[in-house]
Length: 89
Image (cartoon, rainbow, N blue to C red):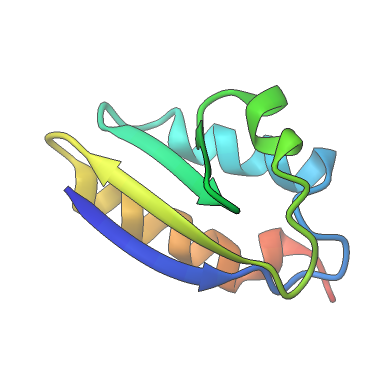
C-alpha cells in the first residue's frame, strides 16, 4: 500500500471535468485507488464519490493505492493533479 498527500492546485478543484479525468486515469489500473479528505475515504474510480469530496483549490487530500500496479497508479494520479488536470489555472 502507498499513501501520498497532495494539495489540489487547479482553480476549480475537483469539479466534474477534473473528477472525470481523475477516474479515467484511475480506471487504467488494477489496483484499488482511494481518495481521502476530511475523514471521508472514497473510491477514486467512481465519479459521484470523487465529486462528493468537494475538494476545492488548496484542499489537501490523501491518495491511497494498493495492488499490483500501485506505484504506477500513484505516479499517474500525482502527475495529473500536479498538472492541474490539464487546466491553465
